[in-house]
Length: 177
Image 1 (cartoon, one colour):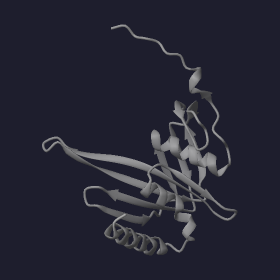
Image 2 (cartoon, rainbow, N blue to C red; image 1 turned 180 degrees about the horizontal axis):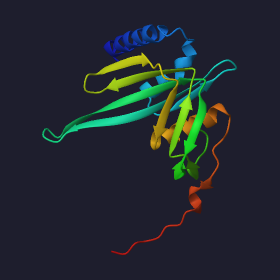
Image 3 (spheres, rainbow, N blue to C red; image 1 turned 60 degrees about the vertical axis):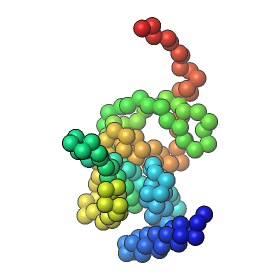
């Protein structure tokens, strides 16, 4: 690693710690959000006193004229989340952690979660900025992939392992043109 890269990483980490320090929460509450920001995806973390999950919503702005676009990632950090509602059933393939293969399972199409606190980090690829704020609302809705990830992370908090039909139960079939 180049020394300038290392300096930039340390500077970024210091700014990150200062930002999250403004919310009067234990540092470990932010682990899921930090992982979502740095690695991507949804994450969960729990201790006896605290449970937190991060869930991402991704939006794309696209200019047809210039044929360029940008994504905006909203990373939601939910502290001590609970289900308010789940709706619909989606059959999907999923893999988690130590499993060697994906399995077919069901997830809700939409979920509403409530949390003691909800903090959102909006990542603008266009502006190269991360905007962080705490929501006044205590409920948040997720649909589609975001709902699948939220449901999965809630399972982690409840120490539920995913279980479903393994991929090798599927059959190949050739389609003739």
